[in-house]
Length: 241
Image (tube, rainbow, N blue to C red; front, side):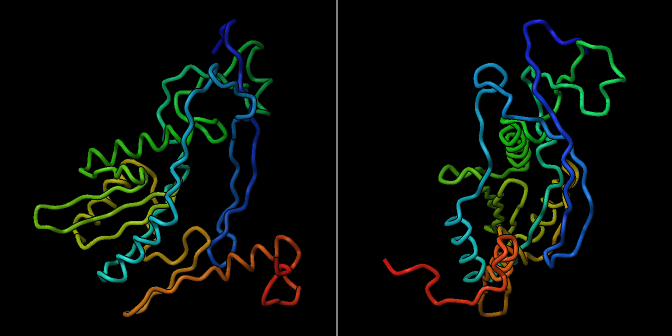
């Protein structure tokens, strides 16, 4: 559409990435149009920002409950989460690279949905996600806004915690957990990852008596990225004091 004379445009670019499985094998190649959020000006084309990042201590408490109460632990992944946010603000973006010759000068794209790169996109996504859970009867906890709980009349509970687009679901109400899975898949593009095995760089292995958490893969990937994989191990990597 034609760009209003009193509006500024946000830049954009194409980003090409390679998605991998937890074991490091290639899952798929991905091309994504990303807005250049650094060209936005606070108070002009964005206001509040917020990223739904669960507190680590909340995750630790949740894992402790899972072990002590012998609850199942499931993981969901929302594909292209930031594209789900509804947009009320009037923000314009430049024509994507490669399509400039197909439109007349002075035209721009107006956002109707959020997009990766825009500063308010995480907030828009989490607002849509929170509203969906509230409609399903889940209560958002004030101590941690990324934690949602639901108590059934029979006393059973279901708990959900979200970190950007990764979701952990647990509880003793399997019927509600199955229903939640179906409802989320009807609203968003959700991938059911089954029993949680890898989350936030942590590998999770479970037995009947305990839950074992390891960051071995995360550490190896970090050493590989920094070119230090062949270095000799040390009990104290840094000098004491």
